[in-house]
Image (cartoon, rainbow, N blue to C red; front, side, top):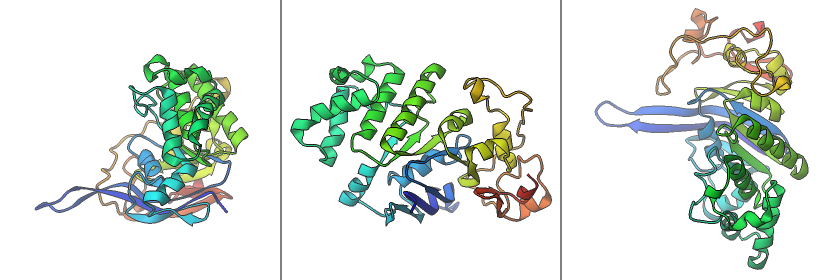
Length: 325
């Protein structure tokens, strides 16, 4: 049984009513996915594709308009109150901006202990020792608990954010661009820490990012998202080696060679520059949402929704011409 099962999830925002009628922004528009225990799945796409909204919706931070989320076999789609709090003991988020998720007036040890207090998972007298152990588990001195967020570097603050997420011993971490604000050398340190913690604790990751080089380094599988929908899904090596969807190919054409460092360009790669306009997320789209920018679009792409094609076992692509990939 998968740890996380997401079925046809939709998150729509009503942004205008009145004489001109209702306008709906389809931030997430029919996403389905699974995540196994101990697995790391990357969710990639351009800014505005719906990645962060989906991650927030899975934790109940944004309400669903439709669809279902199951965690460890239980439906958690409509939980609230105590039920939602118990679910969040098992599913936590690591935010892009650790400074923004920490109270600048609160010592970092108190910020971590606050999670233990809210969930009541550790007795009061044992919380200080637990905080020290959490800091040490992410490579920081336990004595740093009395320091304030501004006293740390960006990489250290992200370590504190990870320690805070681990406080209630979750099985799933949703990491929303966790290294995008860090220097490249620090990115590698944080990514290695996350891989070590995954191996040690058996964590599952949903790793949200726009940097495919980072995702390739961390993840077992990759899901490509475009305008609120998953358009390609495959094991990491398969996706990078034999991408099927034209959008994925364009993204990968800018990906550096991880074997030569996170920012080294791959030899022999031709950069694909997408032209045309991105459809508005409020637009009613009858065919493929990518067709205005697609270099191989045909009339059928504008007229009919593309099918989900299994290009190879475990590799799906939502494209009229996926089999030609």
